[in-house]
Each structure stands twice: as structure tokens, then as C-alpha cells.
Image (cartoon, rainbow, N blue to C red; front, side, top):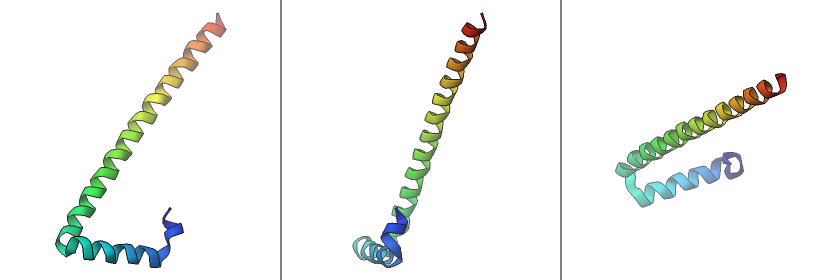
Length: 68
């Protein structure tokens, strides 16, 4: 995603954000965005671990049935 924007595009976006929000609000917005991304990452990690646990349980059940 970032590679398709390129450095000049990223600089332009940062300048526009600076003009719109001002230098005082920009760090707050960055912090909020970071927290949101962190929560999303943790939620995704929890979801994938839940799914992998269920897959493992299902494989164990299938192996038990096949061994009988």
C-alpha cells in the first residue's frame, strides 16, 4: 500500500494534514491512529488463535475417530 503512494505522495498527504489539523492536533491524531491499529492487530491475533485452536481440536477428534 505504502509503496504505491511513494515518498512525494506521502509528503503531500502529511503537508495537507498539517494544514488541516494544525501542528498541535497532529500528534494526538497520530497517537489515536496508533492505538486503533494496535487494538485491531490484537483482535486479529486473538481471532486467528481461536480459529487455529478449533482446527486443532477438530483434527484431534478426526484422528481419534480414525484410530478406532
